[in-house]
Image 1 (cartoon, rainbow, N blue to C red):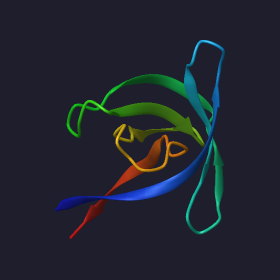
Image 2 (cartoon, rainbow, N blue to C red; image 1 turned 135 degrees about the horizontal axis):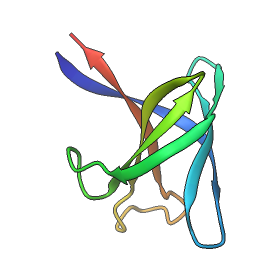
Image 3 (cartoon, rainbow, N blue to C red; image 1 turned 30 degrees about the vertical axis):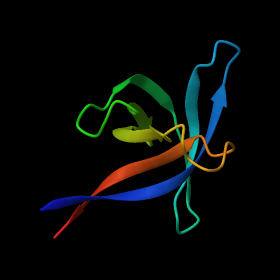
Length: 90
């Protein structure tokens, strides 16, 4: 099995120290899932050093939510990065 990605819209807050934490996930089909708790975050070295894995609790279940920071040479300075989850593919 190969892993694919589902890119998501995520509502997040950034506090005065620069800490970014997700608060709600908007699934591509329109469903919304509040993030009940952020357990921890760490670099997701399996992808690259620009990707952070957030271990979150949604509806009582632990999930992995990823944020990949865009490379600084991306054309739009307004594009910070993208949120995604892993998806198993055949």
